[in-house]
Length: 113
Image (cartoon, rainbow, N blue to C red; front, side, top):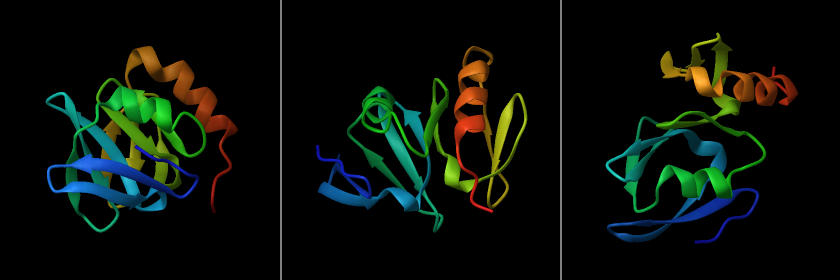
C-alpha cells in the first residue's frame, strides 16, 4: 500500500481506504490484523499487521510503545514510565521492553504546545 507524509492507503474488507495520518490516535494489534482508532471516536479494522505499520511509520510522530500498540505522539497529553495518556483520557501501556526506546523517541519529538 501507499504512504506519503500526510496520508496512508490501507486495505479493509470494503477495499482500499485513504487515511490522514493526523487523524490517527493509535493503532492496536487485533487478531493478526490491526485496528486504527481515530480522533472522532471511530475505528476501522485493516488487513495489515502492526509490524507493517511500524515499518511504514518508522519516523515522525508514531511510536511503537508495546507489542500491541503504536501511538501518534501528536495526541499525547502526558506520559509516565508505564503509559501514555492521550487526549480524551485514553490510556495506552508502555511495555518494559520498549521503555528506553519510547523515552528516547519522546524526548526527541517536538511537542505541540
